[in-house]
Each structure stands twice: as C-alpha cells, then as structure tokens.
Image (cartoon, rainbow, N blue to C red):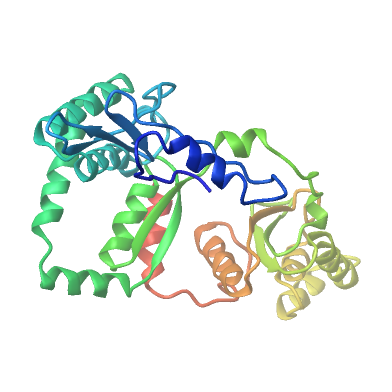
Length: 328
C-alpha cells in the first residue's frame, strides 16, 4: 500500500499508525506516515498547500533529489518524442496547478529546465500551438474523422533519422497511423542476459544466399533452423549439378526447372554458390508477417535471383513505400 491521503484529527496520526501496524499479525505489513509541514503535504505529483484563509491550492511536487534532467534535444530520437516531453510537462502543470499565477511559474520552470537540455524556443511555441489547436478540435465531426482514421490500422516503425519521417508521411497519406520507437537503446547495447545463439540454430527467419561467381542473391524464409534449410539447398544443388559443362548441357540446363531457384542458377550459369556468405536478414515468429518481410526484401533487392516475388503477393500500397525507401 502506498500514498494514501487521510484527513484526521490533529494529534491522532501516531495512534492511527500504531493501530494499522497491529492488524497484520505476521508483521509483514508496516505503515509509516508523513505529516503536514509548513502548511504543505505532498501526494503523488501534487503538493497540497494550505492557504491563510484555510482553503487549499495545488502545485506540482518535485522531490529534493529531482534534477530536471529530461531527454536531451540532441539525442537520436524522433522529433515527436522530444515535443512530447514538453507537452507532457505542460499538460501536467495545467491539470494539477489550480491558480493562474502558479501556472505561469510552473511554465517558466519547465522552459528553464528544458532550455538547459538543449530545447530551442521554437519547440515551445509549436507545442503550445498544438495544445491550443487540440482544444479547438473537440467537435463531433473531428471525432468521427479520427475514428475513421483509426480503423485503417497502425504500424510501429524503428526510428532512423531521415528515413522514418518519409515512410510515416507516405503511410499517413493512406490513413495508416504510425508510432515510432528508438531502434537502438543503451539497454539493448549493454544488457545481454542470454547466451548468444549461433546463426545456424536460429529459427523463423528471412535469409539471403549470395553467388560466388556473380552479384546475384537468393532470398527465402523458413520457420525451421537456418542451418537445416541451408543444408537442404546445398544438397539440392550438389545432387543436380552437372559434370562436364558443354554447350549441350548448358542448353539442357536452361530448359530444366529444379526445386530451388538456387539450383537453377548454379546449373544454368555453372556458378558456385557462396554458402559461407549466407546470412540472416530478418526475423519474425508469425508466418504471415514473415512472408510479407520476405516479399519486401525480394522487391527491394536489385540483384535477386528468385523465380517469384515471395510467398506473399504485396498490394500496390507497398509500391510507393518501397520506392521511397530505395531513393533514401
């Protein structure tokens, strides 16, 4: 139990605390109390202040250890995350603080603290404009429009500066909402609680196999171990590989259609497959999503050697997105 605000008779605080501590016979639950000091008492993010006329006002409460350190403006995060810091602090002040003079002081404190974190003056103006605009758009018409936009779905994109913004704009044109998350964090870099799994033992992956003799590659997906699928490709190529490569065998090879496009490529061109250079390019546990990722990689790879466009037929919505990604 944490943070309970109680109004009791003066001088009875200790008696109530002692009584509560006798309820649990095992002694596992202990209660402590904090009394009002100088007419003030904190409760969660709120500081309750008793005024001379016995009424109360509310302020934003910050602990003595609070350092006013927030997400720095120069950090590798999308702009909306940084503007969200300003918006959250301003909204908290407007929601908690009860008197206008105190609201102005709270806003000035926020501006000074975030300015030390590198936030420029225009960022505060933009957020204030967004807050004012949001208040003006609380009509029934806008609510229906937002509901219609939500029904189109949402995607979460990893943030890459200069890339994610363009993809978000394209998706928004198709009424697909986007959310952005950091692609790399300090936790991801430093914390590795599990032993590293060998790439050959990884499952549910999208992979790429290059050719030693040219720049062609094969893209595929599998739910089994990468090493198992790679051995299947290798055995199929070795089983169907021609001995002497003459004009007649070359002509015959072009007429044959083998189990895998890798085998076709090796036989038709007498090329060597770079099995050691095979690598995992994506991971996804859900099969349908994995086939979509496979199709995306096939479409974006210029030197692909697949016979088809992957296990999932991409809709035309992907065309502008993939072209934008290649241009970037």
